Image: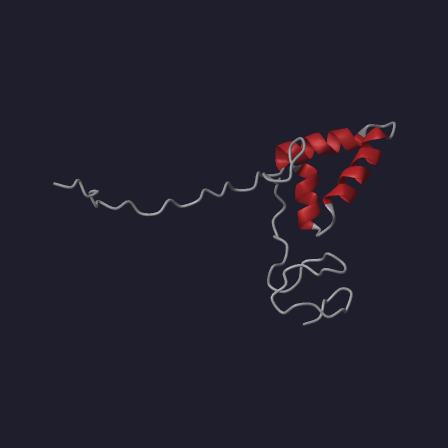
Length: 108
């Protein structure tokens, strides 16, 4: 199998290209813009944008910081609006194994 982005040969069952780091195959980024629950620093807005656009979250955070530090302050306002408007990623709760009604052996 070959990476669609850099063209290098990769494993058949790979989800990420080891050379360029992009997602490949059926594991495409989600199509809905959501705030991340896992990779958040403040509210998960930058991580949500990074996952939506398939970018490195560090690059998105650095660009957002540069925009936020510019004099008009539009980056801070945009972050707050994103925090309010973007829905939060659904919480994934692990399913507990079914309970059994087997009594432990008590011995006689």
